[in-house]
Image (cartoon, rainbow, N blue to C red; front, side):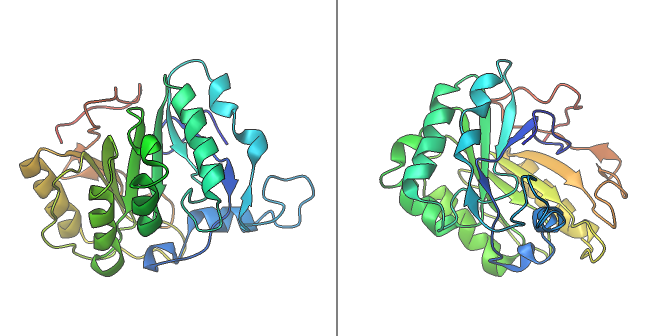
Length: 253
C-alpha cells in the first residue's frame, strides 16, 4: 500500500487483497510474486505469507483517509477478481470506491470471465460507478484477446487494456468501446524483449481509433533501464475523464 506510486499511470496503490496465482504467459515473471516471496517467513511483514492469497480487511478504509484526489491502482499485488476472493468481499471493496467518489480507481484483472459475469450480474452497480476504471491484461493473442471481448461486454464506465508485458504482435485490434491502452515491455533478470514494431502498431491503431495511448516502458533488466520514449516521444495520454498525473507530460494519443 502506498499513497505515492512509481507506476507511471497511477498515483497510489491500494491492496485490500494480497497474493495471486499464475494463469497465463504474462504471469511467468510476475514482479509482484518476486517481491512478495522475498519476505516469506519474516514475522510481522505484510508479505510474511509470501504470495499466498489473503484478504486484508484492515486496509479497506484506507482510501477514505486520503482526502486529496488520487488515481488509485486497486490490488497492484493481487487480482480482485481471483476466484479465491469472495463476491461479498469484492462488493465491500466496491462500496469503499463508491463512497470515496473524489478518487479514480483503476482495477486490472486477468480473470476476465469472472469480471464479465459479476459486472453483468450481482455487481452490475459496481461496473456503473463513474470513478472506477476496469481493465484487462493483454499479453498475447491466445490469452489476451479474449479478455478484451469480456471487458467490452461489461457496463464499465471506463475500459482499458494493459498490454504489458507485450509478448507478440497482437495483429489488428478491435478497440470499439475501449478508452485507454497502456503498452509496456517486461522487466527483470529473465525479461522477454518487446519488438518496437509491436508497440508502434498498437500506437497507430489507437491514434486511428482515437483511443488514449500510454507507453509505460521498454523493459529490460530493470524497469526503467531502457526508458519510455517511443520514436522520441513520451506517450502519456489518459482518458478524458481524468486529469493526468501532475508530473506527467501529455502527448496526443
